[in-house]
Length: 166
Length: 288
Ligand SMILES: Cc1cc2nc3c(=O)[nH]c(=O)nc-3n(C[C@H](O)[C@H](O)[C@H](O)COP(=O)(O)OP(=O)(O)OC[C@H]3O[C@@H](n4cnc5c(N)ncnc54)[C@H](O)[C@@H]3O)c2cc1C
Ligand code: FES
Ligand code: FES
Image (cartoon, chains in turn green, yellow):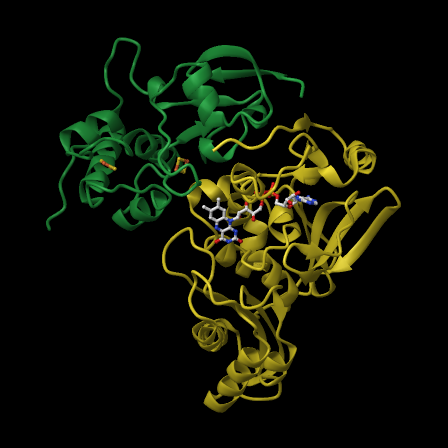
């Protein structure tokens, strides 16, 4: 079967490569490009650990072929921090608010939350919870993930973060 | 999990896509979002030798109003339908149903064409399209034709679509202004297919039901149009007796499997429950 030439912009960098049509986007990112920040959790399109941003949409990269992303603009967790290493507001939020324990779900959570905040800069708690409903976390119980996203939203909007009373 | 090998094609017109399907035969499948197809290719339940990606065909995109119809391009995604002001105004039940499909990531990618062409009784759009009396526009080597959703589904993964045909658009008659609607889906958690689900459309004038239509998801090997259930409402004031009659008539035509969604008996009962809840909600929303 002929390989296919693909070209994409990944984390601001132009990438050209030959891929087998059956190569899943997540395998292309992790194995061909060495971008191992995107995780494979379930491999059955349920857990969201493999979520990346593709043409301004959150997608599960275990359920798409790399060839489908030909020409696309992709952002992965590796592209979130500034070049000088300054953390993105979401990364800072997850760190400050203990939004992770084992960290396995975190790249997918952050990439999903990133698109959620782009579409809805000021989400309610309910909107955050339904916004990340395609991402599973086996450790945190989600409470601190919600707070991390609220922290990031406040930081991006330039307002002080206030923890809601429990 | 890695799918079997296949050759990838990316035509830019419906004509080219149809020609490819006709030339490549049985072993070629259209690829839309891939969110039904790729998971079964990963488990190797499907191993097509050719995929014809429809993503490069711009004419398959978009949601338009055409006289007395709404035309939804096959490649319109669930999130595009959720965001469409036109659908929100004229067919809000499509938004309500789309929001109950999968999860946010799935909805960015999954398309209406893939959802209705797939033939999986678990998909939510087919029963809704039966309820709305939608037609599917098909393009094949012998030209174009339209098939009503109510005549499209023969069995699980067995539909009226020929191998060389592409479903290009879904056409939905514009319903009466002020109609009541609801899509009620019972599922255990986000991302699950329905244990049972019901789509209900109602028109009420002076307190009396003038027209009704009901579709059922995942309670037989095809989606179901519950004609007798809907008839049980027409001419009534949609009181408790009429609703119970409709729910019973809906249960009577189900033939659910006993599987991970629950035993058949339970799913049959839950069909009645979703029908009742959908009718009650649709009634509240209808202008009377
Ligand atoms: C985790 C998860 C949860 C999901 N939950 C739900 C749910 O709750 N409800 C639900 O309804 N769906 C659900 N889905 C399915 C999802 O919505 C799919 O996107 C949809 O069923 C198929 O659309 P697609 O564009 O991905 O089609 P594809 O997977 O690309 O195609 C599906 C089938 O249709 C054929 N096909 C596609 N487009 C056309 C066309 N235009 N003409 C002819 N044939 C075509 C393909 O050859 C294939 O056989 C879920 C999927 C996942 C991964
Ligand atoms: S690894 Fe892709 S959704 Fe779980
Ligand atoms: S932190 Fe362990 S899965 Fe989320």
